[in-house]
Length: 395
Image 1 (cartoon, rainbow, N blue to C red):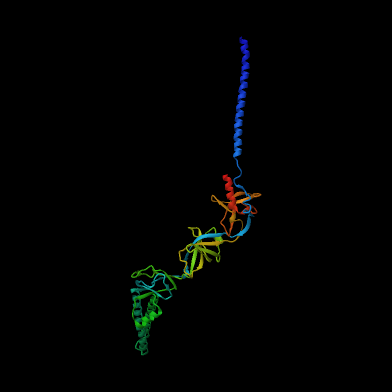
Image 2 (cartoon, rainbow, N blue to C red):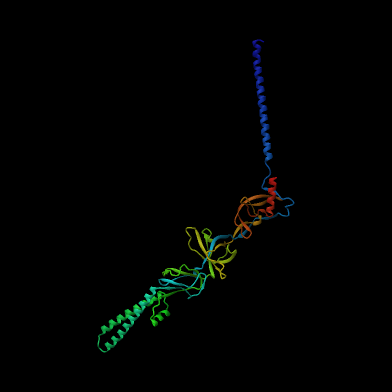
C-alpha cells in the first residue's frame, strides 16, 4: 500500500471511532435512565395511603356515632391547693396575768372547757407584793381621812387655822389616788372585784393566781410544764372553738379577677375522701409578692369535728361562664401525650386530627386550637376506630 492510500484511510478510521464513542455514550445514558426510572418506580410504590385515614367497615358502622363541634357557655373550674385552719375569731391564746411559777396544770390537751374554768394555777410573789401595796395605800388613806376629820373639829374650835386643814385634805387626796392606783394594778394582774373585796374584808394576802379560760372550746395547745416560770407575754394554753373552721387557699394573681366574695366553692379533703360545699368569705386586697398569689378564705361547718386544722385540701372555684368551642370527652383519643379527634372527610371515612384542649368541665373539653365550630366529628366509638386504624397501619 502506498502512502497516499494510508492517508486516505486515516479520516475513515476517525469517523468510525467517533461513531462508536457516540453509540457507547448513548447506551450508557440509556442504562442510567433505566436505573433511575426503576428507582422512581420503587419510590412511588413505597408511598402508601395516609396512615391517619381510616374507613369504618360494616363491623364499626353501628358503633361509630357522629356529631358536630359546638360552641357552648362553659365555666372553667380553678383548682388550687389549700388547707384547713382555725377560725381566728374562735381562738383564744391564754397566758398568765402575772409572773409566777406553774404549781398545777388542770386542763389537758383535747379537754372541753368553758369560760371561767381554771386551766392552771400559779404562785406569784409579784401578786403578793401588789396586794401588800394596796393594803398599805388603803391604810394610809384611812389615816389621812381621820386626820382631816380631826382637823375639821379643831378648826371649828378655833384651835388650828384653815391652812392646816387644807394641808391634811391634800394629804388625803394623794393617799386616795395611791389607793386607786394600787387597786388598778391588782385588776391588771387579774384580781377580780370579788377577790378585791375579800382582800379588803379579810386583809389576807394571797399569792395564788389562777389561769382561767376566756373562751369555750377545746384545749389544742399547752406548751408549758409544771414548775415552769412564766411571764404575762407567754402563751400557756390555746383554746379553740372547732365547730367552724376556715379553709384557706392561694389563687394565682392571673385568676384572682374571676373570684368574688360570697361565691360558692367546693372543697375536697383527700385524707377524708370527702367533698364539701362552702362559701368564700374573704378575698385579700393585696398580692403575696413572694408567691404572686391572692389569699382566699371560706368557712366550713365542723360540728362533727372531722376537719382538723392543717389538713390539706383542694379548693375548686368555678369561674363565670363564657362561650367556648367544646368537644365531648368521649370523642377525644389520647395518644403519645397528645389529644386527637376523628374528623369526617367522606362517607364512613375519618381522619385522625391533632388538637389542643383545656381541662374537662361537665363532660366537655374546651378547644384551644385544632378544630372549629360545626366540624363533623366522631363523638362515640373513637376508641374502636383508632384500634382499626392501628391494625391497618401495622398491616
